[in-house]
Length: 138
Image: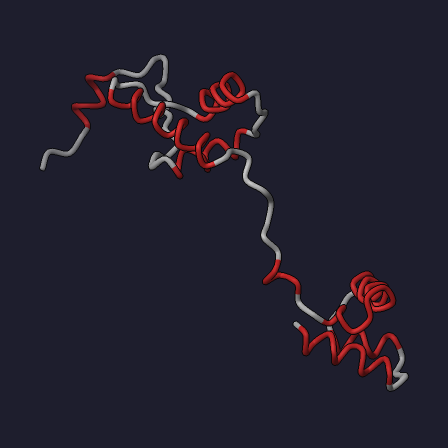
């Protein structure tokens, strides 16, 4: 990444046409202007790749809250209750007062050792006897 950015700035320093610089560096015009803006703001530090120091988004639940959720899911599972994402979402809202997106609830379930479970839909007019009769015997 840094080598590519250095090449981009070296080509610009040679005063090559912008079209040629973009063609060689394979940067879009928008990305090139973004890099130039960063270079004007921070200087040579704009060459650095900041992905290694990016810690990512903060966690929504603290480790203690995640453990409480996992304990509740395990307790209900032992009683035969299988949680879905909507149930996790409602429980987190009720217990901790935090709004979470449904997709994040599946991350919490996986961290607790569960996968999202939902039974397959059954056709209203489906005939169970015919289905069993058509199964191959092994």
